[in-house]
Image (cartoon, rainbow, N blue to C red):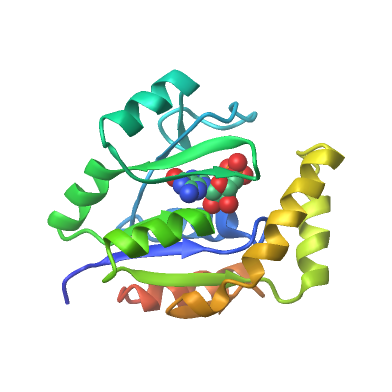
Length: 187
Ligand code: 5GP
């Protein structure tokens, strides 16, 4: 089977990052897109690994040069975008490729690459989502409120996706995603 692009999206704080980390650790054969962002680096994040941390001007240049597959302002604040060329190269090389992006970005990819597999990562419940969001402790209360507003809207988008994976347990959800990508689970 030819590898196709998989797009993982879902409400904020649903655990997309945790699922991604699990897959990074257990499935090195999966290629991850590294997004460009204007958001400041958080402690522990590595430029070029977790994101390409760039300025607003640099982001404008990427847009002008047509180098982004998709981009969006996330949580009404910073811009995030997927560099197109590395995605194209991974797919041409037959490497299973994964984008972990927000809903607006997923919609843009759907317009441009309708054959991609669109996976919605859902929380077990709204209460669980709120507790994950407020428990993370890395954002200010105002930022948390902004993210909850986004999350409420994003939950309604599930029907636009090909398939839903519920993030009840990281390992189970990650393995479900891996199987959807056509990769056999290694453990
Ligand atoms: P964070 O700032 O917590 O790393 O990410 C915030 C949100 O931005 C997450 O929902 C993440 O999926 C989304 N995001 C990360 N990279 C991209 C990207 O390249 N494009 C879009 N549209 N969203 C992204």
